[in-house]
Image (cartoon, helix red, strand yellow):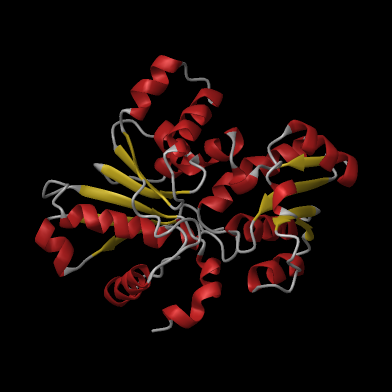
Length: 305
């Protein structure tokens, strides 16, 4: 594992013009397959597995899920049996490179109808899964939960630079809650990768309550939080020609790959705020690259330079 992950300073005429110091926390370099926030969110779940008497891990995800890809790789690394419940009973393990690699890493793939998949958070359905698959440790979709959040608090402990603001993408709010919980004064910006991402505020509040904060403390912490919901480009795993062109331009200027599901939307939102002079000159911003580049396999024909 490449920890602590490096911090890269980006340079361009655009950033100089606006007086912005932009640093990128390269969590995408932690591991080739268990990259970014996925390693951090899974780390303590794996410790829980080893401390308990579980027979396997079971988790959930879509056809191109970074979480599924990373959990399968983690299972192979730790020699743990892993079951992945995949949304879409019309799929099979050869449907795309994500599922192919998950199967190659030893994950048992179970393809679920969308109706059944939507029950994944219901206790009675989780009990049914245990009846089907034995004594499994169930990890929520995306690694959501206390253990995932706590693992993400370590990101801030690896940062020595003084920063004024932190940007990161959001899917469940787990990583952002960890960063918020682990920081003190910085303003935290979360860019929702999902359409209708206002619910993410509630997710963050719930996770902070799981960490033991009372309502007053949560209100104080979330004063530093801004969830941006206008940069989803149609919704989760959706994209537009504008986003694809941004990804290409970004790679050309900064020599850094982004994924279209999360980090490209984060950087697009950040650059829109910089263009609008939202930040004072001299502001130092840290953007967290949460990995997930394997997801680009579904749009390779669009992003080839």
